[in-house]
Amino acid sequence: MTVCLIDKRRRGQQIPSVEMPNHTWFCVLDIDGMDTLIDTRHYCETATATPAKAKKMAALIENWTPPDGWCNGNDRDWHEKMKGYICDFLRKCNGFRVM
Image (cartoon, rainbow, N blue to C red; front, top):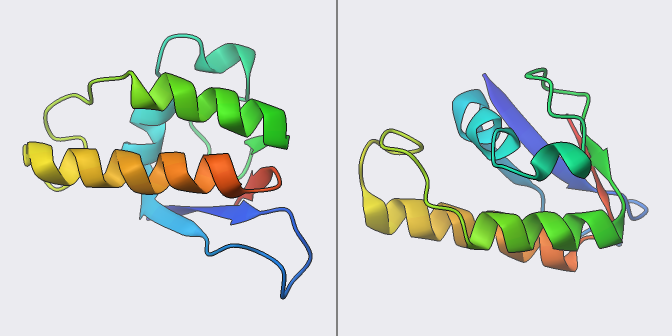
């Protein structure tokens, strides 16, 4: 199963969504401090965020070291790429919802 972060802008104005495995998203939700920004329950459609909160989330993720097996096994280069995709989306979105 996967989780998809979707920009809250109107259709046609949205930036591309970011899709990831559930486990990858759940690890992001478990980052210290994330619970002050969004719903961190391990469900796939409960998290939403304003643009300001999305930017704060990006800062938390950027300074975080993912655990082994986070995404694509233990490939640290891929971990950095995935963090980059998520942070880029969070900085550019107009808030998001999860689907």
